[in-house]
Length: 120
Image (cartoon, rainbow, N blue to C red; front, top):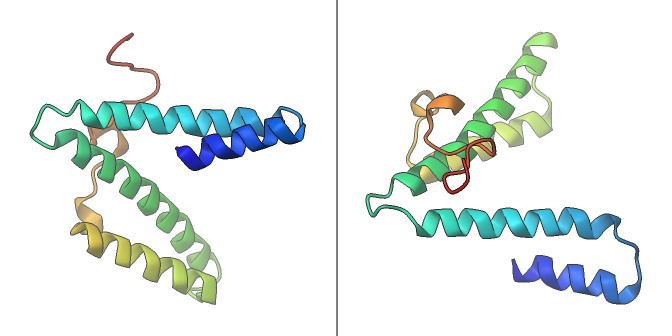
């Protein structure tokens, strides 16, 4: 978060318009919101588990897209796809999760932007 804010201040000081500040500010606010939400975990770790699963869901969806591309080429994998597969496999191993154990997005327990616990 500090890096994002330093970049935002640097861009303002250098007079480089506001187009990039908006994106950086959004990332900063997203990070702050995530940290605040995680820090309010009820003590059972469910929010942290949901956070990890939400990121793994994105990895699984990306892997699904890669597999579809490989299938469309007659099961021929290019080097970048091999690296993607290896990277995601390492991520799953580090998290101690098997791909088939990753829940559906609607069942992972991570709140969507549409449902804010404080305002929704």
